Image (cartoon, rainbow, N blue to C red; front, side):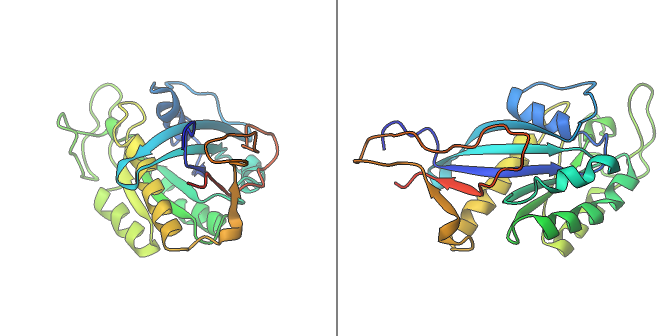
Length: 238
């Protein structure tokens, strides 16, 4: 249909401990740049991105809510989980505590988000511990002069946890951009697969096209708000 810029709008949340790089991942996705010294997130931050899923012949608009990782803002972040169909659970591969705490973040998501939410476990900051070829997976890699750190969570351990919990998994780097778009694209593919299989109820959709074929009229598209969005998914009928 002429004039359609996207077929679906999917609400994503990005959650995890403070300082694991959630804001940097969002800025890398939306602006294709690295946020070296981001200010701590106060409450939530918002970003959006259009991505193409060729095998589905669909263009998807991601609406991403980056939630604060500090305990004092955790209750505020939970209010944004409602209606989310995608979630990035982010930990720092050089900080074991952030990985251990993923269980708590996952419990929050499953309690407050859509019961069928697609979650992907994202091990961020692999650039800090990678070898020159970017393939280091050892938990005991030496700390190198400069900004390199020892890896505290192996990819094998994280992948095993993801399988046990039914999560997708990827390791990424907000600094280099490695696998950042992949994390969102893999999640979007999984969500669209659930749509095809009828996992999401039909009454959860909001039609955004009215009038005669080929015509576009104004419709409700959620934008940035200080309040949680009541919208789950939006679809253009084709």
